[in-house]
Amino acid sequence: MLFSILSITAALAMGAVSPGPSFIMVARKAASTSRKETLLLVLGLGTGAFLFAVAALLGLHAVLKAVPVAYTVLKVCGGAYLIYLGIAIWRGAKRPLSMGTSENTQKSGSRWRAYFLGLATQLSNPKTAIWFAGVFAALMPAEPSLVFYLAIPPLAFVVDAGWYTIVAFVLSSSFSRVAYLRHKAKIDRVSGTVMMLLGAKLISMVKE
Image (cartoon, rainbow, N blue to C red; front, side):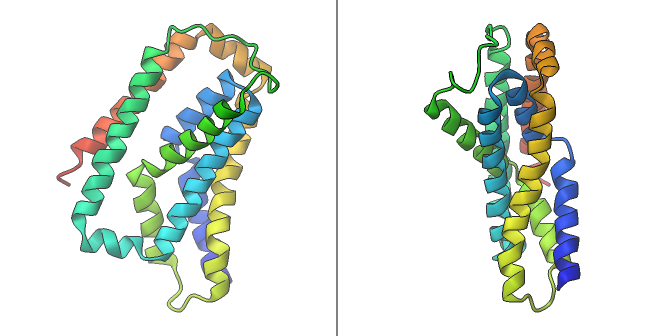
């Protein structure tokens, strides 16, 4: 049982550190806003990982195999959301951003919007859903114990939120912020383009 828990945790860690929409959102948020707001975004990503783990334990892999249209819907909705985020980032590329984003000046509403942005970004990624489903289908023990069921979702949260917390602290340094502000338009356009391409790729895979 312990081996299965460690194996799944290691596999989820591999998925968490791979570049994707979540990394783009954390990197951009860390360089442009307060650390507290970025950590709320990270909390949202971790919550999404927790929910994916719960879904995987409940048989997400079996559902996607039995109902192929469910995966199609995930691809279309997830791709459309990523394209929407990409367009929003691109359109705001030239918008000036003040460095006066200390934690005292951030409104509570803005902070919680960051949390829900993180949650939506995580849940909109069908590749994450498939990764969780595949990992659990391959590595779950034949007869999981109650300890297994209780341990895996929190571990999924810790792995995802832990990795992006490290990213947030590294990229929220003064050096990163100054570099981002200096090249904001270019960075945002590249980030927005990558996000839109990821969304378009997901939609183009509908027939697969």
